[in-house]
Amino acid sequence: LADVPATDDPVRDLAALGAAYVAAAQADPFLYRAMFDAAADLEDPAAADATFGRLVEAAGRARAAGRFSDDADPVAVATRIWAAGHGLVLLVLTDVLPAQALAQHGPELTVAGCVGAGDDLRRCRTSVRRGWGAAPSAGASVPSSGG
Image (cartoon, rainbow, N blue to C red; front, side, top):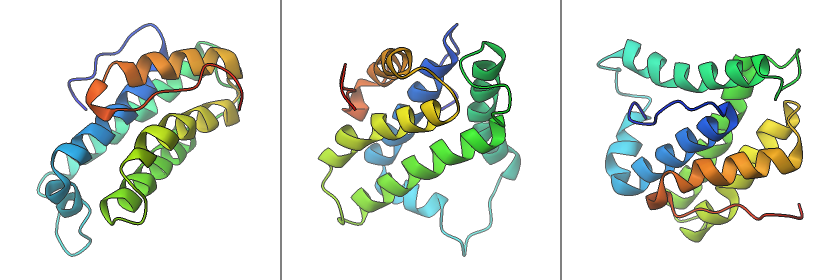
């Protein structure tokens, strides 16, 4: 996720980080599972915190830019978006859902998290589409209308 650049659209950045997360899980599912093995100690807890911090920072920028409501807590928003994406990835990696579920539901989970934080639905979908498009290997797209 460190390679995902920050842009002037923080909602796009949240989506791009989510897409990169999905792409990394798809690229190396064994490493992904090992990263979340509760029996293993983190080699570098600060690195894990910094990674999550990227989501928190983007959510904070979205609030500061007026995309999210003033009372939207960046840590809570980042946690919800990460937890939803993480759950979806695990459902795919454990074969509960097919791989296509990542493309079908991943962007919409991001949209739901951002709209729940106060973003406008249409504007959010545009940003999320751009963010997921920045990581084509995630293979996900966002519908342009409907909901």
